[in-house]
Length: 285
Ligand code: ZN
Image 1 (cartoon, helix red, strand yellow):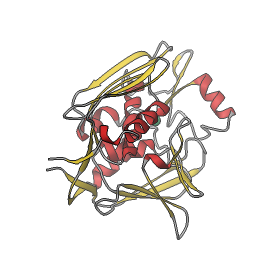
Image 2 (spheres, protein in one colour):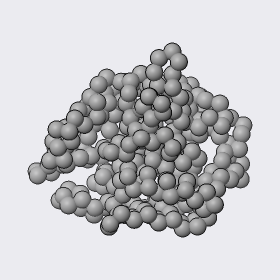
Image 3 (spheres, protein in one colour):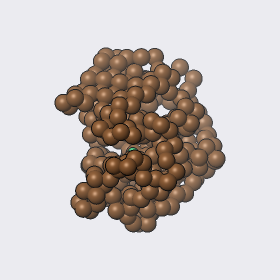
Image 4 (cartoon, helix red, strand yellow):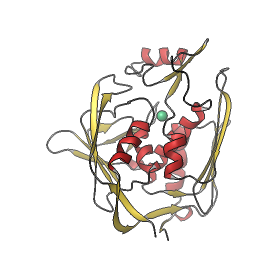
């Protein structure tokens, strides 16, 4: 039987927010069974914002959660790390309005969490098992979810840049070890002309070659190059895992994505939650 897990100890992270450019940090620690992932934002009487789809206030360039007057931005990479490693319950105490971007991937979160280890909490884990096909389309973008006995992901990204082009990756059995090795290290990326436009709009102020892979007319601007030849599509999978964490329980389905992004991932989560008979909770055996 699969049992709910939390972190064995708290871990802290400090850095800059990708969009605000401001110094920020958070402490991620254990939480009781049944808690889920909950952000605590602001002072001595913090607002608790569960990492659930109904609290999403924006998916423009990053995922922001809000409740009352409080908000927490760029949650997707930490959520990917927690979900990818099979952490069911955690308390995230925020020291700023945005998660630190760190190196632009989920690797620093994953390494720190694995270093303290996970603890089983003695309560059977709940899953969401997909019972019928769900498909969301937006022009030539598509996400299709099919019933399956385990989580598998096939993702296709397509960007008209000579260093990217069409990248396809398939993970037939998605596990914490696979996530940590093959997905978590893939960094946020952007194209030089888009980054300039983003910064002109007041976003991406914390972006640098330390935390973003930048493609320009010459190729890859980062001195160290890429971590994987197909780092772009792997980062798309990372974002998908983080966005699906907003379902509030691990999903058991075969997922096929063509040219996805946060908005399409979010639309799929809304479609799943809007059709509870298609994706009920069930305890795993
Ligand atoms: Zn991302």
